[in-house]
Image (cartoon, rainbow, N blue to C red; front, top):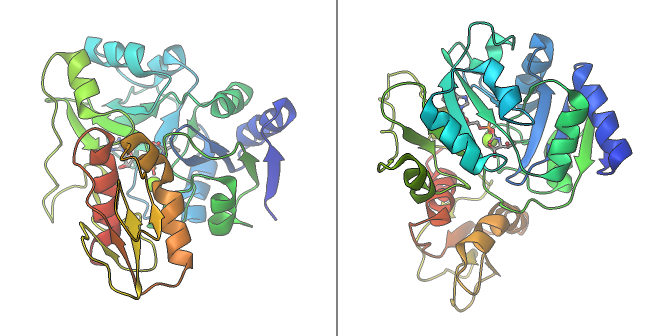
Length: 316
Ligand code: TXA
Ligand code: MG
């Protein structure tokens, strides 16, 4: 049985202690719920892959409380420090050259010479990290390939009985995962669009920052979040829908008529991102033949929303 803890001081302390002891604990971040394990403990990290049923070539994001806790894990360039100063704590993950003496499980990096690090801004995540006192590897707390969780109930629906604890901190504010930015060598490139927009990153670096090209079919997987089918509800997803069939659900955006659910009736991309995964789940539970989705503008957080929707719609 998975224990559900209140996100109070006692719950966060208990969660931190369990993490340090090698147990798996799900906790809220501002983006989505994470499935945490002690990054220094290879058995705990392996347990994350097992609980998620995740292909083991996927590297994990290591969560730490601040830049000072991140520095011993990776080589920080001036650009990396500037981005950390601007966006940490917050929804930006930096992929950096891993330090030889990082002292975290090799499995975290899945054999890559880099490591992904993020400093979350959610007060509950921060309290849990402070109590844990160790770097915490945490992918989204969902079975592999499924929609990411933005509430404790979502986590329980996917992972009950497979992890020790869930800290219930209510719904996540941002709703899509962090932006993953590759600073491990070569030109900076976004591996996964997310809570921090490409414009935000470009403004700090003073150069335009684009998306990494998709990996060659037989090449190494640069960021496994780039796997085509991902974030998939059980029902097929149809994008850029203008019309909707009688047996389809319509996930609307903006002032559309006849939406079964609407991501943001007023057309706000932040509100839409926060609603995305929970609404996909609710529609999936409705037993529709398919989920049709209104067009979403491809700018700002819309880039992250469309990225997740394209994966949800990809052939499986
Ligand atoms: O918002 C988030 O980032 C959430 C919360 C829990 O913090 N976490 C999350 O983790 O989404 P996960 O494991 O579902 O996604 C990690 C992403 C994947 O796209 C993975 O490929 C990429 O980060 N990644 C991790 N380490 C990497 C590395 N060394 N090189 C390239 N990509 C890496
Ligand atoms: Mg995920």
